[in-house]
Image (cartoon, rainbow, N blue to C red; front, top):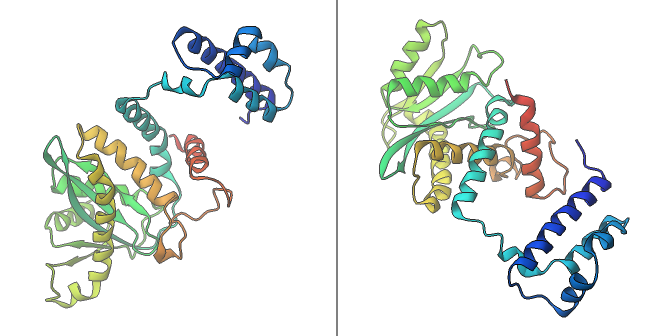
Length: 289
């Protein structure tokens, strides 16, 4: 629903009235002009008499002391709460968007710290389009979680390609996962890159794909290090949803000629990053099951 000028004006008046009352109740320094306006004039009469929204904004700046924002302190926990709420809103978009994927996916695990203990990220992505298809953080690196991460990838396809190729390292959990899916009627080719040297032809041929996944791990960790770890596994996964949304929809990649992995003209060409986040939050409502 698009807000009308009248709705914007009404909201601005209400917020301003609250801020002026707040500024009167605390000892905030005002300019002489601001003090005169607040004491001698009725702010609501001044604001309601303005028809042009741009002029309304100008009057807001005059009426509300700049230092009033100091009263509204935003704590670290408030930011965490905001991020957690947005993560829940946007997860359906990240998981259910109709991505344009090729028949090749590469996967790898890396570890992060949650309350000082190792937890494991199962990353899968399309090495051609750079779209991340699986990203959940688990407490264990085992066959069950490998199967779940592969299932997350398969769910991104309308139908599983007959020539689907998965590329991983030499961890045997992926061989067990391949057997599990075969038993349930889903077949794919698994290619494994062993070690850090090309001692076999398979490793030599598919190592470039594996290195793309390793680069994704490093890119994620560059952003993760600043968090100094997480308090809970839930918080870690909330952050991961936001990171994958940014990576798939907003982050420009040099290997894609500085386009985003999802290049579906979702945004206006000159829109700011804040507006693009708001657009993604709005779009996410379409993908709730």
